[in-house]
Length: 120
Image 1: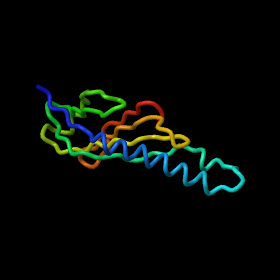
Image 2: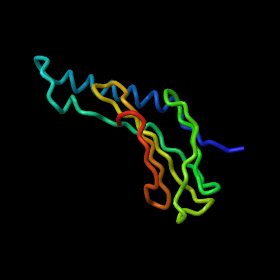
Image 3: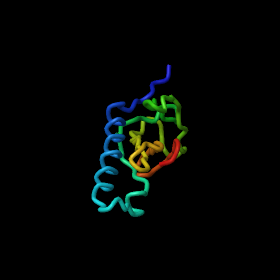
């Protein structure tokens, strides 16, 4: 049986709230309703980083809603089994609305995998 390291749905929900709150704060700071390109750009908030371990040359993760997927990532051969790694999930927003998620996996001080779901 494969063990999937899981991210907290609460942490993801908090990152989504931060994206909305930040956009509202920036938008409110512009007088006359003129929002410049700074407020219109995308933003990304790291929701959570979790510790994972390389097992059978892979790292298996369970992504929270709204993605709700389980999958395994193959790691390069220079990352041996048993290596402690870190997986981080970030939430991308545009105009304060969630637009995607980005998964980053690092091991031995190097990013070994990145995947974006949607726009982030």
